[in-house]
Length: 226
Image 1 (spheres, rainbow, N blue to C red):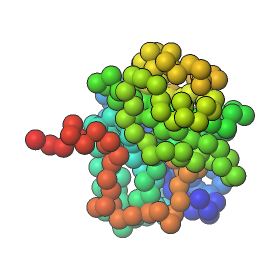
Image 2: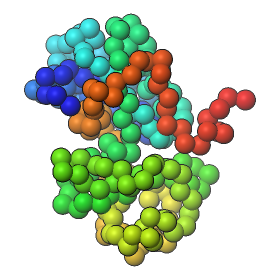
Image 3: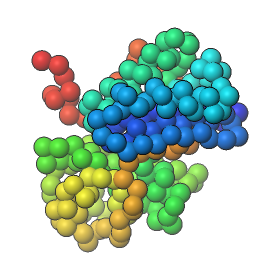
């Protein structure tokens, strides 16, 4: 992300409703962990960061969307809001993985290089992302994010590498942590994505038109409308 860019980040893929704006020098953030309130919270939060930064939507270079995986309803809220704002101002959208945003924050606060982020996917599964610190101190995906059931994580077993875990999924399914304990070196306190870290990972070259947004549902059969 170029420092001169003015970007608005939005993530509602978890119980956290998170909004942040970067003007190239400062970051203005609102972050509230309150389930089932995203539709009420997100627009006022956007207005607050715009006001605090003395910015207008028209001043933005792009909108950065926390694209999941995560809550189906939550992802749709952020996607819909981002699309509405983008259409109204002719802005593009930069989709960023919500799991990688968690990993980025963990890497910033830890000396560990390998991070495993899990979020609750219900149905006895988690959304799992495995990352390594790259030369820019950002998370690089080791595998495509996927649905992991309660069992031994194949990548752990085949690579025998210790990981620091993060995300709510590990506490939701302690059996997953127990079954993979020989490859887990610790548990981060960071549970949910923050929009500030979406901005840190945003790449303007990855910007797309708002109508082309495809939330990372992973479990497509549940996400599809009947």
